[in-house]
Length: 190
Image (cartoon, one colour):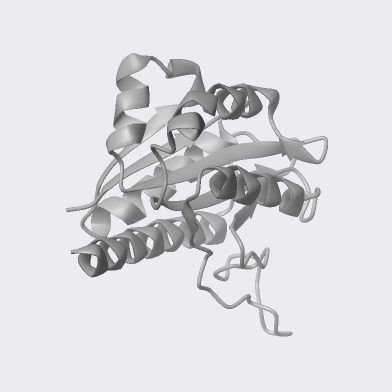
């Protein structure tokens, strides 16, 4: 059974809701997974990250990049970086913002760069977008992320209202994909 840690920051609760959906997908796919809010990083959390087979990064997109709280965690990861303790782990990422675009890709690209600095292996969504005239807002991958999971929550919506069901289902399927990729990676390494 692969071990997956979803390390994330959520400013208002929307990104936490996405993280929980990603977690559900990883667990349904057979992984031993856990959520790790960046505000709860301690020695035990660093040990969990070191023992993980995959790390999924998550943060809201604020002003065109990941939240400052997530960035603080990333900056603190210099010790594992120096020892290359995350080398060859699977990495993936997700973000949420108030608008459909909101420069979400900048946040995903930040996660990719962080993963590459740690010598990790990046896994994208593996999903086609819902880009036909018949597409509705609750179709899978409506926001159209390939490199990472993208979700959207209107600025005036509470976490009980958003992200919408389609984005949360996309998050669940994304979690299942990362779990499957991780299991294949572990099996190939044996």
